[in-house]
Structures are given as C-alpha cells and as structure tokens.
Amino acid sequence: MPDVTVVGGGPAGSLSARLLAASGLDVVVLEEHKQAGVPMHCAGMLSPETIRLSGVQPEILGTVNSADVIFPDGRVLEVGRRTPMIYAVDRADLDRKLADKACEFGADFRYGVKCNRAVTDSKCATVDTNAGTIRSDIVVGADGPSSKIALSVGHNLPLEIIVGMQTDIKYRMEDQERMVLRLGSSVAPGFFSWQLPMGDITRVGLCVSPPLRPADYLKNLLKISGLEDREKVQKFSGKIPIGGRRTSYANRTLLIGDAAGQIKPVSGGGLFPIFKAAPILNDTVNSAYNLGVFNSSVLALYERGWKKAFGREISKGARMRSLYTKMDDEQMNYVGKLFDTPEIKDSLGMIDFDDPSNVVRPILSQKGIKTGMLKVYLGKGR
Image (cartoon, rainbow, N blue to C red):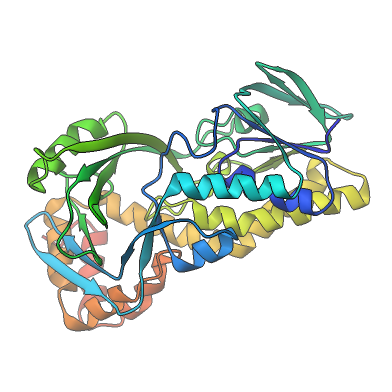
C-alpha cells in the first residue's frame, strides 16, 4: 500500500508527488490521460518567478515586456518595462518535465488510470479507478476544476467557473515582445482576451462565464484581430474555477491547484499558487506522519499555511474581479480615460502578474483616481 495517492498528473500533482517522494514517502500518481501535458488547457503565460518556483526549465516560446490594453471604445493603453513581464512557455513541455522530475525522485506514475470516486475512513483513503482500487494513508486531489476528490469532501463546488478557449494561428506578430489584451462585452464579457507572440505562431484566446460560449466570441475576436483567414494550427479549451472552494482539506484528504480553487481571480492563472502551495502540502503530510495522525485536525495545517502564504493576494484579486465584472463598456471606457496618464501607465508597467493588486495603491495615489473609481463602484462613471 502506498503512503500517498495523488490523483492528477498535471503540474499540481507532479510537483506535490516530487516533494513527497523526496521526503521518503511511497507515492503513486494517477493520471487519466495517456501522457503528461496532453491535452493542454493553459495559455502558457508564466512570470519569471513562477518558472523559478517550478524547479524545471520549460521551453520558452516568447518573452513579453509590454502590452497594448484595448478598451471597448478603441482606446489603447500602452504599458511596458525593460524587464520581462511574462514568458510564453510550452505548457506541454513544462508538464512533461515536472512529471519526469517527480519520477526521478521515485514517484510512480500510472497513466490512463481514471479516478471514479474516493472515500476515507479511520484506516485509509480508498480511490476507486478504472484499473482497480488503491488504498493509502492520504489522497491528494490534484485533478483539476472537475475534481472527483474535491467533490468527495461534500458541498465543495467552486464559487465560480469561467470557460476559456484559444487557438494557435500561423502568423508572426510584428512586435515579438508585446501582447495585446482586449476588454469589453463584445470581446470577452466578464474577463479579457489575449493575443500572444510566440515566434511564427500567435496564440489568441479568451474566457467568458457560462452559459456564454467561448467559441462564439473567439470567432469574433479573430475577425477584429484580422486573423480570421489565417491557418489555425490547434485549438484548445478548459474550465477555470474562481473564488475558491469551501475547504481544501478533510480527513486523509488534501486538495491543490484547480481542485482547491487556488486560482488568481484577475488573470485566471493557477501555476503560481500551485508552486507556492505544494511545499506547504508536503510539510503538512510529513507532520501528519510524524504524529501518526491523518485526520482533518492535523491536515488543517495545510489550509492555514497556504492562506497565510498567498490567500491575501487571492482575496484582494477577488475584490478587483468583483468590481471589474460589474462594469459595463461605458464604465470601462471611463476607467481607460482615467488611467491614460504617463504616471498610471508607468505603474501598470510594473504590475506583478502573480499579485496584480500591487498596482492598486500607486494608482489610487494619483490625483482624481479615488473619486473616479468610487463613481465606478457606485455604478456611475460614464
């Protein structure tokens, strides 16, 4: 019987498995797909710090140090800096390298094994799969937004789900260091779209909230981007749980990544929270083994730990998203006009993509911004 069963072989499962195996534990990873990194659901936009925390070096497809933010009325805010904002990486390559490194430390990856359900009792955690039953001391749910492990805890749905879709186009953007972000109800209501330079390929995508269909908006986005007639290399989509879940732990159970709702509400990114949470998960599991106790009273250390590490950033991001989703196009245009100053564009250029709320204070310190944003908050500002 393994010590820990990790359900899900994506970045959350692979890094958790690597750390747990490096601690001397017997770890089994169950991945429903036949190989790591496929299918791909992420835009692949990572900060330099996120890449560092991953512990591997993925293939870099592009380096972005500036952005054109396009508002519904066509106003363009050009923001940037000399150092990289983000890197465009090959996400499939990242996932494979994370899985390979976990295997190097002794984790046992079992591909094509799908979790049907998980139950726990005083003796063990039991995972029923299409390949049989696996029992262990602890089960780690790293199985994404539709996590079977999260649902096994009960009443643990994510607060909000958004759906994204993107496509790779055979087209080389003129400026290989500048991405394009578009806002507005006709482009990506409730979120934003992206156009990302990746050499001879341009990645174009967006997110919307159900019941809206991202495919309908992607078609329009390609049209307004002038890319509708270009050759499409591949298309992929996925769900993003935003707002967190009721809990990320229970008896003999821990959740990480999308399964735990550990998502940055503003950008929808999940890798930075994963890479911050995995060491805390590892420490918690080792504490449980040192005590010989695997119930929720001990495993609660995990949730306290990750919330202390980055929960504040997620909470601040949730407030920013709440304000953003309440704005109509006219209010967005008003904000665009407010922000179209050299001082604020300089502040936006220094945004931390892992903690975008870091720009709030310097922006609000500018003359007239607090009054203007209060109008937006009150439903005015048109």
